Amino acid sequence: MPAPELDLIRGTFDLLILKTLSWGPMHGLGVLRWIERTTRDQLQIEEGALYPALHRMEQRGWLDAEWGVADSGRRAKFYQLSSLGRERLAAEVSRWAAYTQAVQLVLRAKGAV
Image 1 (cartoon, rainbow, N blue to C red):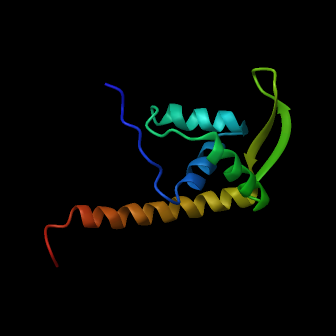
Image 2: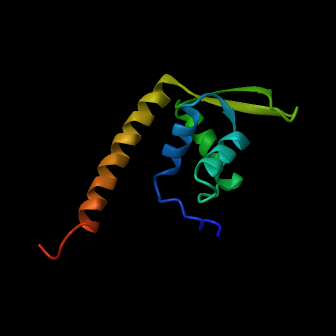
């Protein structure tokens, strides 16, 4: 049975992109495919959401980008984390850990306080 698709939780998209690019430079379609493959297709990323996010993150200085040639032979823009992007990734990971810890407290609660 195929795994159900999950909706992205608001605020996690940047974290997923930054973590994906922590493994090395990738073009946009590579980022999209890496996330889908790694999540066993449980997260489906729309190109219409990905490219604006990549451009926004580049404008904020979190990503560096340069044009190159993809495996398909087509020209593509390759993104990689900048030093500011690595700092942002660390902050996002910390924030996500605190958030999930708080949610776990609610889920494990034995009743009203």
